[in-house]
Image 1 (cartoon, one colour):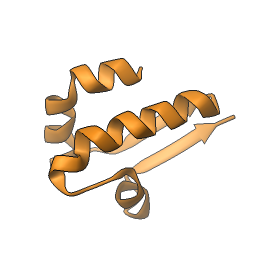
Image 2 (cartoon, rainbow, N blue to C red):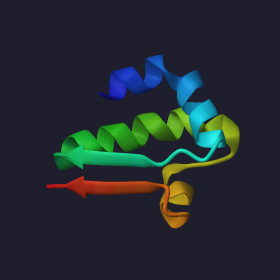
Image 3 (cartoon, rainbow, N blue to C red):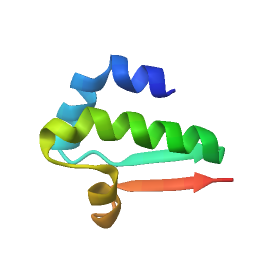
Image 4 (tube, one colour):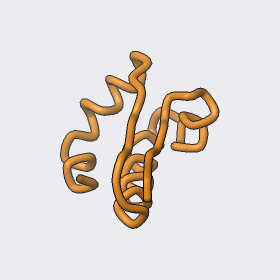
Length: 63
């Protein structure tokens, strides 16, 4: 999944700029990798996952 985030980074940035929410479900290791990949993708927006979480736009259901 994190590979797909990098490939589709430009599209993800556009969606996040428009207010998209991110929902991550799965294992802890996968979730950590997704978070790292997403942080790289959204850095040009001056955002990070912590910012999205604080705004209620990044949610996790991980185990």
